[in-house]
Structures are given as structure tokens and as C-alpha cells.
Amino acid sequence: MGLFREMRRKNQQMSEARCVALLEQGTSGVLALLGDEGYPYALPISYVYHDHALYFHGAKSGHKMDAVKRCSKASFCVVGQDRVIPEKYTTAYLSVIVFGQIRVLQGDEARTVMEKLMLKYYPGDSESNREQEILQSWAATSVFALSIEHMTGKMGKELLSSPCKSGETPVL
Image (cartoon, rainbow, N blue to C red; front, side, top):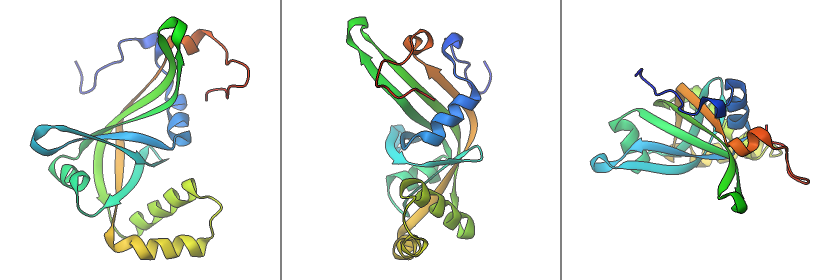
């Protein structure tokens, strides 16, 4: 076995382009780190995808920061669709899991990422409001980059063979 496992159900594996599209469109995911006493620590976060990395922010101290300092390895999961199909005892889903290394950003690089995050989640806000928000929160804020080393996406077999139902948004 290599550094990362191959997907067992290859017929359900999404292309890299489709994985990237899901990461670009997603608004939140779950970051998994090595927490206290060796327990996994998984937390929901907002993020932005850019240039084969995920970026997010958080406090300068706390469980997340302690875990990142302890071990820079992490995984991150985004679920792009999860529609329950009761009569089949299953769900129609799309998901992406990434593995990589986290680092804390500094200076201009961190500020640029904060702008990207703000533009993603409030694209209509003014530059002056964004600047004011950054100034108010900067002293207490850390900015992180998760460089993607491995990425897999999986599509439920129900999506492989069935078109969208009337009124549903097509997936990626």
C-alpha cells in the first residue's frame, strides 16, 4: 500500500475536475486533526479553495491551534449532496476527502486569504467594510492553509445511473 489508500469502489470515483468543482462550490466541511490525548478532533469550518489548497481561519489559541502545532497532518471532508432515498435504504451523495499538511500563514499571505474568504461568503460587501472587519479581528485571528497532497471524490451509485428529479439542482 502506498502513502494513501486507493479508493475501493473505483466505479464511483469522481474525476479530479469534479472534486475541485465540489470544493469550489462548497461552503463548509469537516476538518480532522490529531486532538488531545491522541483523540481525533473533527470540527466544521468554512473555507475557500484556491490553487490546490484549502484556506480557513480561526483563533490564535485553542484546540484547533494546539492540534495543528502538535501535528500538521490533516484531512478535510466536504459533502456536496446528501439526498436520502428511503425506499432504497440509501442516499444519493457526492463527497470529497482531502489529505495534506496545514501551516499557519503570516503577513500579506494571510491577509490575502482573509480577503478571499470574505469575498466568497459576502461577495457584495464593500472593500472598506472588509478592511474594517480585518482590522477589528486581526490581532485574534490565525489564517491556515491546508496544502492538498491527496484527494478523492466519491459519488453514490444512485447518481451514476439516475438523472436529477424535477426541481432538483443538477450536481456539478
